[in-house]
Structure formats: C-alpha cells, structure tokens
Amino acid sequence: MAGRTDYISWDEYFMGVALLSGLRSKDPSTQVGACIVNSQNKIVGAGYNGLPMGCSDEDFPWEKTGDFLQTKYPYVCHAELNAILNNIGMDLTGCRIYTALFPCNECSKAIIQSGIKEVIFLSDKYDGTHVSIASKRMLDTAKVSYRKVEAKRGHIQLSFDEKDV
Ligand SMILES: Nc1nc(=O)n([C@H]2C[C@H](O)[C@@H](COP(=O)(O)O)O2)cc1CO
Ligand SMILES: [Zn+2]
Image (cartoon, rainbow, N blue to C red; front, side, top):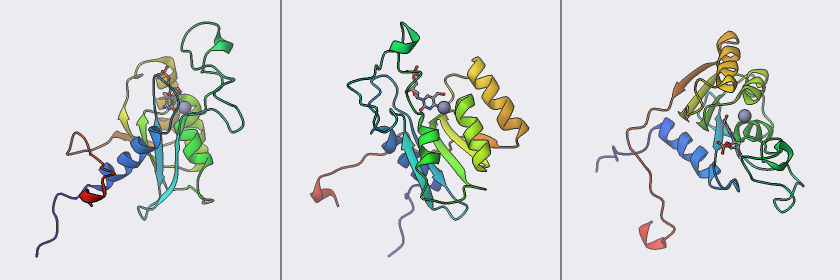
C-alpha cells in the first residue's frame, strides 16, 4: 500500500499549531497564535495573546478605543513574546517563529535578541503602519528573514468525534 500523499507540509503543520494556539486567546477582536520551531523541525515554544499571569480578565479591559489605560493595549502580552517566554528551556538561536500576524516592533526586538532567524507569518494586515515599518527595519538590519507562509490548502478541519479517527 502506498503512503499518503496529501499529508500537511511543515509550514501548514506549524502555522496550524500557531492558529490552534490562538484559539486560546480571550481577546474578543483579534486572536493571534505563535509557534517556535528549531532546525530539526521540533516545536520548542508556543503562545497566544493574553494578559500576563495573575492579571485577571475580570480586572482588565479588552477595549480597542477610549482612554489608553482602559484599553487592552498596555496590558496584553503578544503571542510571539509569549511563545518566546514559554519556550521549553532552550537556546532559540537559529530557530524560526510561525505567527498568525506579522510581529510588532516590540516582539521583533525579542525575536532578534533571542536569536530567532526566520519569521513566517500568515497576515501582514498592519503593513505600512509605524509599528510595522520599525519592526521590518530592525528585522532587516539584524538579518532576520521573513516570508508569508506557504500553504496549499485553504483550511484544516479537526474533529473531536472518536468515529473520525
Ligand atoms: N503581531 C501581533 N501579535 C499579537 O499577539 N497581537 C495581539 C495584541 C492584541 O491583543 C491583538 C491586536 O489587537 P487589534 O488588532 O484588535 O487592535 O493581537 C498583535 C500583533 C500585531 O502586531
Ligand atoms: Zn508584538
């Protein structure tokens, strides 16, 4: 019997893990997930956007507009930073990071400082904003490459029905 040929690619697998991680996010507007992979294609970290540990969702806002201190922006920890901080205790030098959204300037600082060498993103919807321009300037200067994920399929479906296994 021949082996399957429609198995998912590494890019689809790791972006899939990033997207699945994003489903843990409590942000009502934007759920972002990230997954860090080493040169042997082993997952060494994953994360999603959320409040720092001990900061309860009941006490902090998820608003996008209004008084800055009453919005989510000063408090939320981005998916990429969480994936770096959640890593399994490895040196991340030479790793790559899969992220649903292109990293902001603050996360790019952490990406560069951790030694990650490649960013693979799904959406670059904030391209052209100051945050994105600064982010790309630092990544370019630090020689961290970035590219859009290559996916042959539009979606992946998961079933929790035991009959589907
Ligand atoms: N790369 C990113 N990783 C992230 O985890 N985020 C998070 C921060 C916020 O919780 C949300 C973006 O907020 P907004 O698109 O609704 O306003 O996604 C945002 C970006 C965009 O730079
Ligand atoms: Zn960020």
